Image 1 (cartoon, rainbow, N blue to C red):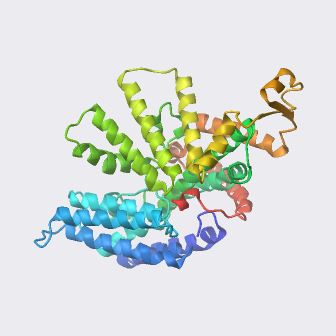
Image 2 (cartoon, rainbow, N blue to C red):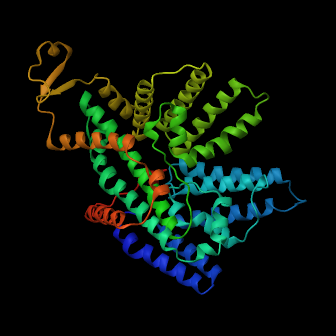
Length: 466
């Protein structure tokens, strides 16, 4: 079941909300948790019931391991138990990532959450709770499939709070607003860019200069609005249930360095990488110095690349970003600075290029787009831009009626996307400033009506594949 489907918005979500708060109204707190766990499992199995055994196995095993880590055991050391837990989680994820079997939906995300839980339990940062609380933490449907990555000690106090068991109109209003914002991103913006990206990547045999740039920019904005749209919808649903879910994006395309980009893009993953990959790798080093921390940075990003999927494209994606972060840190250490405009231009284009590698099925497909962007596959100049080709023919440039009606629409959308990302308030800012009023209600209503007619083309979110 997708957040952007009629079944979810008009059937599943209202029933889940009504059941949860009705049961809590009669002080049946545990039953209310069970209701939402059941609803979450139904939500998960709606895609395929075959996914459920993997989720339940992972959930039960990690709960048992976490409980044992809170005890003083004589038959096994906590370190060995912890190592076994890591081996179990990473082994399960690796098996499905690299064996060629169909990847169970959401496995990457709920595995990361549980790995973080085991590490925190081993270090004594979590309190022992019952199985129902743990099942709620893992299965909570807004974050189950594509995050944001939520930590046990962040979620559990919220679901334990008595105040959060009551329906809160202000929280619900904020949830509707943020959900509509995310729905608009997904249905009206991301889906529009998706068509141009798909044509360039999956259908075209070669791409001239303008077609290649059209393809790459379309995918960059498709990915951003798709994933940030999903995050907004998840956060909005969380508000409806009085659960605060962490933000995942903070205007990443305003970044003027790769370091800044990763502090703004997929922030919960960045925090996971820093806390549970980078820091342990640094601690394992014989000596903590700049050189070793840069090595740890590269290795952490390399692992993050592989986490996204089994393929040379994801290896290349991790290597590129790991290398860029190392270069960025060296540049920063030497206290060198670029003009802000140039720094933004280089950062955005690097990210745009690496997203080509991220999207492509193979490295050769990525090279098809990159080659076109460099002009190696020819250049077609639209007649509306240049009337006479002249000496440019000697360079292999051609004149043609390149701009079709949908290309004008793309240019408008690209200009609008750049303007919105740089000049308008982002979801994080709008969330903090939200105040329910008639103007906001009308804006949400209008946006929802447009989305309503666009939801007849239901498509999955991109990160469902990871």
